[in-house]
Image 1 (cartoon, protein in one colour):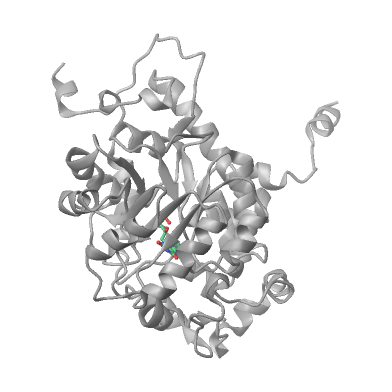
Image 2: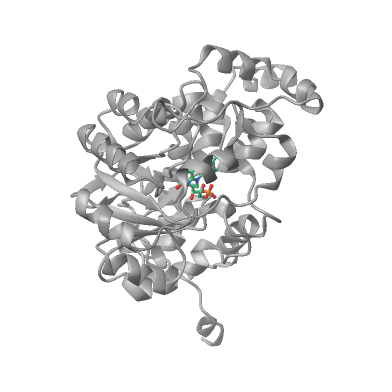
Length: 400
Ligand SMILES: Cc1cc2nc3c(=O)[nH]c(=O)nc-3n(C[C@H](O)[C@H](O)[C@H](O)COP(=O)(O)O)c2cc1C
């Protein structure tokens, strides 16, 4: 009899991606599937990786002041960004070389963002070209640029982005040079990756990743082929330093960019009120509060800690977004409560992609959406757009 009950309860069917219940689960699976050299490239930060940790820890320190016995039966996780709807307020940050983790790379991410009803920001350093990516989706695409040494190269990219119906331009300003990514230096991370004697076994233990890579496109920067190519098997840091970043750039470059781009223009990498005001003064329509996921200057504050400074400075005039360390739906709601219009995630979509290609990224976004919805109910604030700082616990509550 007992055996019969047990047999009735047994369900041995594989649950696949549905079994992944949090972003941490995706990270675990991605790390199992990817060789160390690649998972370190994705997860790593600069120097002592203090900012990587700060981004995560700061969210954990923010506490809720939930309210109960409010009707939360009708909830909404949606919002609008630049007049267009987002079905989930989590967008995909620009992150280069997605084919390293899955052969469908950015094509899969773009399709997943479309089916989830969100925005995908295509990196300048994407593995597929900006045209190839826009050809596979009718969804919302933004394009990220660095400030090149040559305005000709960047002007050409901006024109191509416009022709391929990219909706907004994101200028990343926090890379005058590449941060020192210690793990990448140690592992010899390059384009394509160099498999050193110490990594051979680690790579051979992941035959599926090897097969993926060999069946995928040649690993390169799709949008830059023929204009600025890496030299031989060049380290990513040296390529970006040589071609993608212009350490002589000033805020004047934003004025120039404003002159050639008519759509929404955002500045990514703002941490201070002063830089937010500079961006606003030179015509930006939005800023992304970001420390590049702790991959540039180490020991910067967590982006969620910098958010309030930026919101106080410019939040009533331009859109303020945030990325860095967002791992839970409750983190998204915290960012909203502190004044962000919506957030972006970087590593989480790479982990989703590694775990299951397009479906993996879709499931990752579904996990965020479910968690946001549940947080709104538990918080007593059913409409994402209406969440404000009254939901955040402050010391005054301690005294009644
Ligand atoms: C693998 C990887 C590649 C990245 N490439 C770019 C890039 O090409 N351009 C850019 O502006 N930011 C890039 N970033 C930074 C992300 O856009 C984003 O700021 C950061 O990942 C957010 O932190 P999170 O990973 O904790 O969500 C990259 C991040 C990662 C993890």
